[in-house]
Length: 571
Image (cartoon, rainbow, N blue to C red; front, side, top):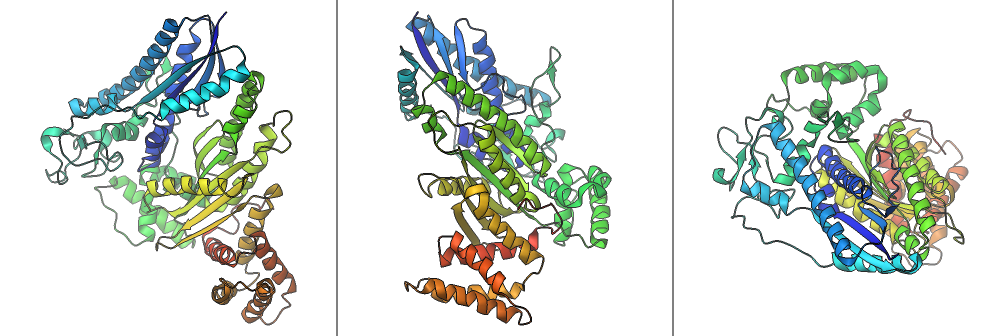
């Protein structure tokens, strides 16, 4: 019986997920991709003579499903294959449009022709059949075919008139907008948009004068369907309605259970009020409900009286298994592919638990990919645990000599910085980490200060995360005042003068300067051990003075933002 490999992908991944202004946008984009792929898998499983290789069909409903499926199709003629691919693509497109229409119905709004056209041309679905005799030969050829097909950029000419563009999707006009005092944003033409100013469900989800394209609105308002049911089953299977904002994550992490009732009274949507009050801002009823403003003032009074400061900095973490695509290609064995997919599914389940224990927010964890938010208080311990768990759960194939690893990009930013900047930066940092050398297994961290200053550190994780652990140990020592904060300033000032030195003796110079800076900061104790520790940190960053300076400045800053008793160290 003739067999063929069938690969089916859904996109666009980057624009659907990354182009987001709020966490609810980010999660909605990730959820929609996973939801549509799960629908495609369910539909494909109804067909005869079909065996899905990956993703694992036993995927936990809470896990994100990768946007690519591979199956074996037996006994189909070429015309039957084409009908199967075409019908599955149409089914997926219709599932997407159905979700969009349900949102419009729930909001009691009628999309205009521009809104409909934007949605109809948005999804990118690709599929390929590759006939084969041996899986080992057919799989690489199938990968080459689908990659070649995706390089052909298919597009439909838009007939949209000129108008103000959506900031999230600049290829599309704003078609849903709010007015302020009866006026829309400049260049928003009333005859081209759907006015949602008086739509109750959009009152606090969408800011005054904010305008969105169709896809941006669908992402922003997807949560409105979280409890909708059809024939007794949820419309949005596996949707997590408890995805919080970054502000609420930071409050819960720092305040703990002591202020649980106050946080519940405040609510997620008003969580930024505490940061507004910390910054001396006046709360407006245009942005927050009156009861939320009252709850915020009451909570802020309590935490201020207890001398608690909530750090406005957080981490966006993105990691990806190293060389996984190549692993599938170099080990094109069907049993191994199925086992690897199951292992990755198990790891994704563990990731959600780890992130939850560390008070973070998991946006997606599916396949070998992860994107999530973490408070600085628990960032390092979460990374240590994730790095340890990956090789424990994702097993190497026979003949592969080293454990499997991942590389991570970590963007640390201020709550007031645009989310899309941190998303883009985390992807850039992940790529930087992966380019460190052929073995990868690295991290890249960038501290994006509110002032605009940026500090980047890149290194290998090392055995048992040893390189990241020494950074964390230095941070804790600074925080616990084991040496003066002036030490970092004194040392970085003198190191700046010699960082471009080519002298072979510069390592000895660094060692001497560390001792001198320690002595200047405190003359009452012997600093030999501390000097040794700092020189070891310098060694860990490839004897690079520039990187050593960046590490010192980063840990000095973070030591002021991380709560000293937040978590037990895993060092």
